[in-house]
Amino acid sequence: MTSRTPDSAVTEAPAKTPASPPAASAAAPPPWPLGRLLVLSGAAFVTILTEALPAGVLPAMSAGLGVTEARAGLLVTVYALAAAVTAIPMTAWTLRLPRHTLLVTLLLGFSATNAVTAVSTGFTLTLGARILSGVFAGMLWAMVPAYAARLAPHRGGKAIATALAGMTVGLSLGIPAGTALGELIGWRGVFAVLTGVALVLAAAARWRLPSFGGERTGGGREGRGLLATIRTPGIATINAASVTMVLGFYVLYTYIAPFVDRADLAVSTGTVLFVFGLGSTAGVWIAGATADRWLRGSTLALLASATVCLAVLGLFGENTAAVLVAAALWGVTHGGIPALLQTAGVRAAPQDPDTANSLWVTGWNIAMAGGSLLGGAVLTGAGTTALPWTAAALLATATLTATLARRHGFPR
Picture 1 (cartoon, rainbow, N blue to C red):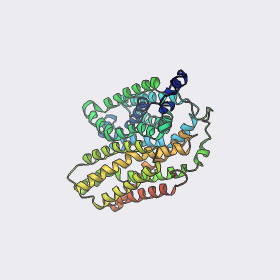
Picture 2 (picture 1 turned 45 degrees about the vertical axis):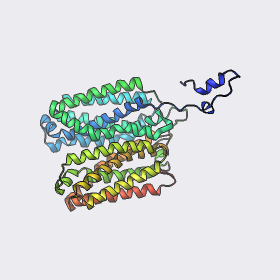
Picture 3 (picture 1 turned 90 degrees about the vertical axis):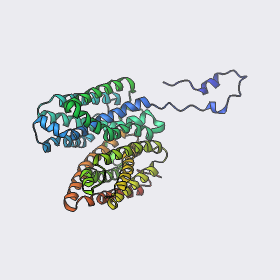
Picture 4 (picture 1 turned 30 degrees about the horizontal axis):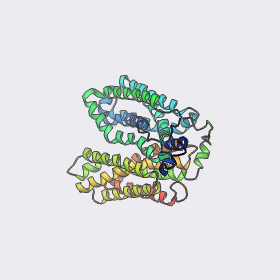
């Protein structure tokens, strides 16, 4: 549905009024769909909060379910593994479904699984609900960037960054807020709140978002299949840079508490993470402002900056001021890089954006687990001082990978 533009007004004007301004002949750009993008951002927020919240209320959950804290930690692990294992096949299976219908269904699914978690008294049932949530998450992460880009094709990078802002807000503010709320109303109450939030978002998506077809519905959006997407020039490079970046990030982030504690800083781990979260919010804004015009430059700049920040933490890890500044800038890089990488994926495979992003989701979740395992091995073998250097080496590799991708992936 198109609206009448100033151009049509000039066309229908009487012949004696030819002196209309030249600018009137140019069609006005479509309005920025902020409300619709915020619905997608809310979906990303619920997804990341559902994933990470058990870590913040783990002692209470383990006591409530009658298991050890180590076993309760599986509630986080299985979520990520389910997303990693099922993102590609489930995305491929649902490619023909209208995106609007699928998004509403996934949000209703999150509401249902969070409701089960809130009332379950058995660990097995809770674990099953978490696995199912992870399956939903894998599909949602793969779909949201492409959906956002289709809402604003004239500013696809900014649209993706806006939609993914929910992930950053969820990590930096939602998890601490959810943990604090859990102390007031209990962990079951927090999951009940998440149930209601997902329901509200499902209703908002139902009424606010337009219905887009899947990747195999014709009209120029005929998908080519998984293998063809994998062979698309640039996709392998984008995912290689993403995996090495995430590996480096989680090598240190997973063990940031022992790193800060053993450095004997004048601030707590919570303060460092709060500063990191503030930086992440700024990073989302930077990605939105630069992704459409300077995708290559902004990606390389943030990857290189992350490498430098980690090296600073390695050199000056016992200096409180240096750690806080480095943490803030590291947060900026981590807030912006995911949106830039997913924008690159959508550009590289415009016919298969959901499939391309399912590859990204799988790589991201596998790298999350791999980074945590690698960080644990480094911590055990060489101590906390080796963590930032290991992370910096991986980020330098990601920077070099993206730098060399001059023709495809991150073209000039």
